[in-house]
Length: 507
Ligand code: NAD
Image 1 (cartoon, helix red, strand yellow):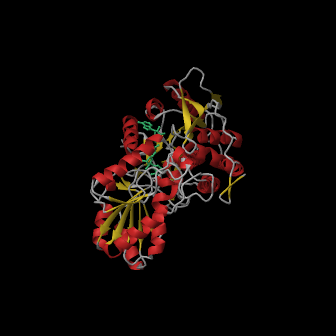
Image 2 (cartoon, helix red, strand yellow):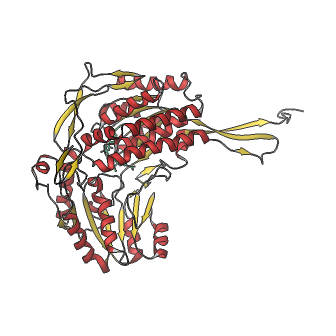
C-alpha cells in the first residue's frame, strides 16, 4: 500500500508487460504462435502491456466446432440442472476469492475506479448464485384445459451461443450472457473487446477451475474484423448475445439473418435525465452527476441528455457546473478519485471532438471542456475534464448522438408535455430518469417515457433480479431478471394422446 494525500491507494496489480496471453479453445490454451498479436494499453499509465493473439477465421471455426461438439455430443445440455448450478456456485466462490484481482485487471484495461470494479466483481458472484437458482427451478407449463391430450411445454437450451462484448464493463456485461447461457445448458464462444481481452481470459481460467467441461466455455480474442465477424456469421452459432454500439448491433442482425439466428442486443443510448422545477435540487445535482460522470460517462445508460425545467434552469446549470468542476480526477486505484481516464485513445479523441461539435452548434461550455492537465498523472493519462454544455438544442448532434464520455448536454424545457416530447424524440430508448417530489407526476412520466428502464429520483441502479434492455435502437430482448434464461432456451410444446383413435382417411 502507498499513501497519497492521506488516503490509502491499492498497489497496482503486477502486470507482466512481456506476457503473451492465450485463448481458450476446447479446453486448451492457444498462444499467439505465428498469429498476429495486439497490445493492451493502460489508459492511466498510458503504457502498453501484454500481447494478445488475433484469432484467425480458422481459430473461430475451431472454437465454434468445439462448442458444437460439447453441445451435441458432450452431454452438457443433459447434465442435471443441479450439477450445472453447482458449477456456477463454485465459479461464484472463485470470483469472490479473486475479486481484487479481477477488479485490478479491468482497471488496467479500461481505467475504471477501484470502488466500482471491486463491488461489481462481488456483484457478479451474487448474480452467478441467483442464476444457479434459476437453473434449478427452470420449468415449463402443464396445460390442463386441452381435451384428450396431456399437453405441456419444456424449455430446452438454444445451442451454441456467441457472446460478443464491449470494453466498458467487460466482465459484468459478459456475465449477463455467460451465466444464464451456462445455466440453461448452452455452450459459449466469447469474443471480448480488443480493448479489454485479458479480464475475460482470467474469468475463463476460473470457469475451467470451477469444472465446466472442455468446449463448454471458449474464448477467441481479436478485433471486430475478422474475428468478431467470423464468429457472428458462423453457421453453427445458434444465438448471438451482443453488447456494443448500435452500428455493430445492426451488423449482428445482418449476420444472423440468413440462418434466422437468435439475437439479443444491448446497444447504445442517449438517455434523458429530467429535472422538474419541484425536484430536490441538491439531490438532483448529485444524481445527474452520477448519471453522466460516474465511470467517466462510459456507460450505455449514461444520463447524457439532461432536460431541465425553465423555472430552475439557470440555478441548476450553475450548481451542476460548480459541482462538476470540483470532481477529483486521478488514479483509478485511489478510493478518493471521482473520475478516471477515458479507456482508450479513440474514445479520448472522440469525446474532445464532440465537445467541439457542441460548441460549433452553439452550446456553451459551463464546466470542463478540455483535456485535464491539473497534475503530471492526468497529463500522462487520457483525462478529459467533466464537461457541462448548456443551451443545447435537442435536435443537435450533441443531443442526439452517443458520446460515451463525461459530457452532460443540458436542454431546457417547460412542462411535462414538452419534457416527454423531447425525451422521446431520439432513436434510442435505453434508460430515463425523472427528478420530482410530485408522486403523481412521477407515475405519469414513468408511463410516458419510451425507455427500457426508468428511475425516479435515482440513476444508474441495476440489480440482477431486474431485467435490463432497450426500447427502439437501444436493443432487442432483455438480460437479467427472473426470466433471464428465456433468452437462452427454446420452448417445446409436447402433445401426448390419451387414447383418441386417429380418424383421418378412416371410412
Ligand atoms: P463496439 O460495437 O465497437 O464493439 C463491441 C464488440 O463488438 C467488440 O468486441 C468488438 O470487437 C465487436 N465488433 C465490432 N464490430 C463488429 C462486427 N462487425 N462483427 C462482429 N463483432 C464486432 O462497442 P464498444 O465501443 O466496445 O462499446 C461501447 C458501446 O457499447 C456503446 O455504444 C455503448 O452504449 C454500448 N453498450 C451498451 C450496453 C447495454 O447494455 N445496452 C452496455 C455497455 C455498452
